[in-house]
Length: 372
Image 1 (tube, one colour):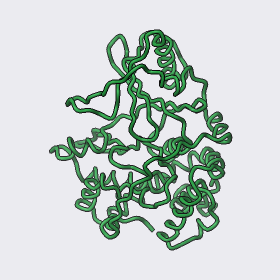
Image 2: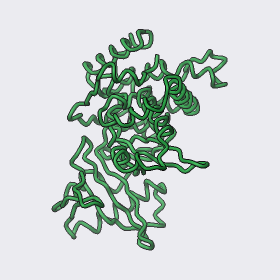
Image 3: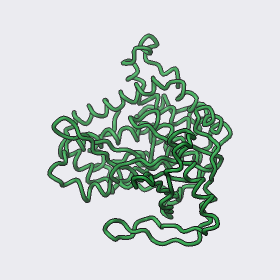
């Protein structure tokens, strides 16, 4: 069974996640996984180092409006070592620690966001030769976010660059136009292909639901516009992974049910028929299946850790379990589930099982997901 876009008008559900999700520490087993796949590395800086700023000023956008970010200032006695550590961290993220280029790099600005759970620092790195700049983020390490980053890296068409060091998480910047800004400033432009954009939102909606990535309101993802033969293609990319398999309500894992995404939902219901929606959902599940098959050993290692981890409450786990059983009218995959990680594993099995018949290496095993 698939989620239809007509369901949103029938149920009227526009859920919101918990106002404040607790930061769940990285377990010993998850740490071992991160070490194995070269995500856990020694870094010259940690999150708490950046809390020693002296004062902050509101950062305005290009139109002069206040943003969600503050620009930070630091004591000059600390700035030198801090700058060097931030440049070295950038080199570790981008070139696996090759420091031969650091002399031409500098820290142009450090911003801090009070909004949201992770309260990230945004580091702007600039090339001193040509003033070209790039960003990366320093956040508190949270287990749900790490699992979300890993699942996105494995199952989506997007590769994710991030590192951990004890309780610190370093994330590469994900470029794109924030969804809410795209709606305001780009959607009604003559060159915008609304049919292709509607198709991409269906695929994004499906991807989030299959991997149980929640809270994809319009400011938690970006839109990439990609020139193509005689037109453009679109890709919607998640940029916030705090709500990976934490909440207990099914609709929180479907972007179509957030009021902030109503404009995208209207595009879907206006430009696509039921058969087209089902086609695009099937296409996305098929591609996710091929990605899972190609990374079968990695996903197996990840699931072995995630199923044992304590990344949500029993109440939320049981609520989501019941909601999925009610939605599918089938408890075959879910009846033995006790943890949120087990629920993610069961949902991947349930939603992707039949697509594995298309993968040659699994055909003789009747499409069973042996790696899960």
